[in-house]
Length: 242
Image (cartoon, rainbow, N blue to C red):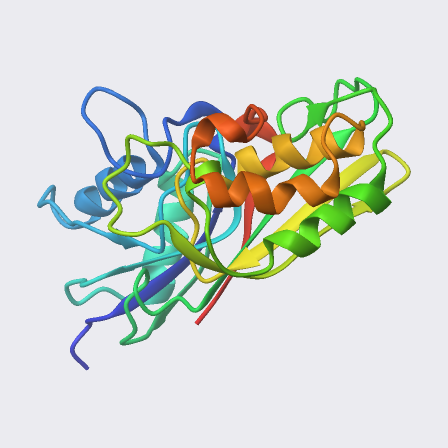
């Protein structure tokens, strides 16, 4: 069998990385994995293609990349990579698949975690916010974010994307004993989009913005209209569907 189109499923803690995408003089998830793969390949470079970009400090419960490999045994590669990589990156699975990790992804889901109070055990993976939030109001606001819409107001303006249109399939909040969880699924996401959405919806949750103002914010297509972005550490790329 010709070893092409190998898909890797991974998970990672993004705390110590400047995002997924490789960049000079900065630790990245992509760069760390490519370095390890290259060592397995006799120090010959191996490039990988990820299912998307996560920003500095953002985590991934599920992430996929594809790569064309030499004649490697996939079970051995998975085992060896997990031994070589730091503990904040895990190779979950490796399998043959002819799909493109980025362009063939149909649905991406993110979750954002908020804690109601400080804990020494959650600081890396959620944001502490002690004011109560109205889940009912935030979910009413979420209904205005669902559909094929222009999300320019929730995206950084210095990106090179050709369009700011995204199709959001669902968006909702739930309250837990310890905090709040926001989940959103879409065909694609713009840079900083989820964190800007969370920050704006939280303004709804504390009563500074009404749910009915969300369509107005969207219509103005200006990042200045939405609220500040929340910290990266509470954000997880949760699931990718092909």
